Image (cartoon, rainbow, N blue to C red; front, side, top):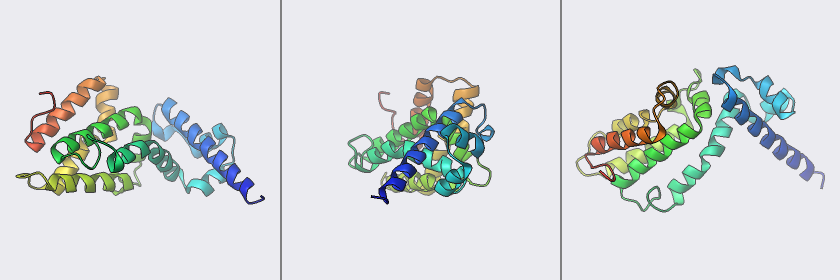
Length: 197
């Protein structure tokens, strides 16, 4: 019985920290404006709790990002078409990029905070490696397409958080227009017609 209480407290504290961090990052002008002290205060826990649970600010952001990304990952790994593994690459690649774009649009504050951290290159992030590997494998299955490793990087660059923020934030490009432009770009790269086009 005594072992369960700390685990419940830890789970409750973790949930409170993630909720507080999410709220603060959503409301801030710049992700750099949110400190660990701000998050601890908003969550009602000590700073030591944050550092023990997440290691550092980047670890906390990564945990929140990964929790939000889990439904996309599940859809890609086990879901039905167009994201699931049974989908042919010419349909799955655009669907994956669209899902990542929508995720970045819905979670711009987190994506910017994680990808914009100077000490943690987005190319070294676990999620980036996962998506690059998956895209690379899918692209290799498309006849006539060469340079699949580079192409995977180029396609992922089109959904980087800083670009999404520049277009959707400062540029005020509507969501559906961004999605259409991405679909058109992806189709050109793949040598295919965009869906519905």
